Image 1 (cartoon, rainbow, N blue to C red):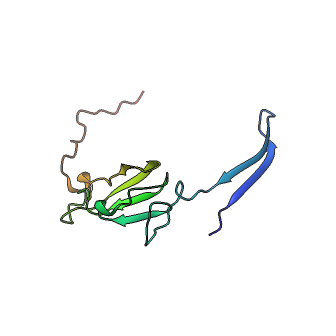
Image 2 (tube, one colour):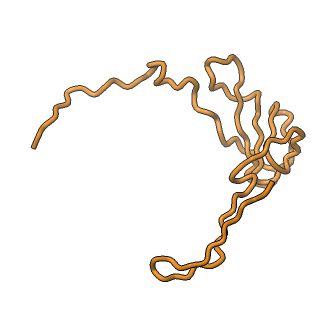
Image 3 (spheres, rainbow, N blue to C red):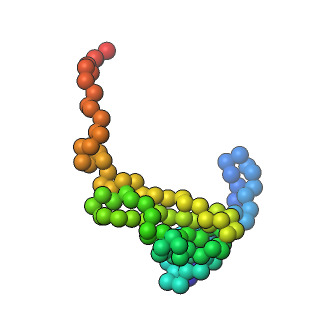
Length: 121
């Protein structure tokens, strides 16, 4: 895979010189690639939480398929994302919002405002 880089040399509105500006898309920060044989060094893996590697490189991810319950249309665990936030330290960083969204079902939906009046001035 090719990583794209953009280089820009010029000046800002206030006249400050900008040189060697590098914009980079970085794997394990801006995107992840699924790894069939995930070992915690690059990309993202999935499986049971107990099978998550004990060692990891900062930025990689692991989708624990036996954790979290957010999809009411699917019985059982739906998954949580753990990312490596420090060498060999996994942190749960993402649980999808409840599905379907409660407002779609009218459950706990707020009442519409009442007593409103439009005034022309």
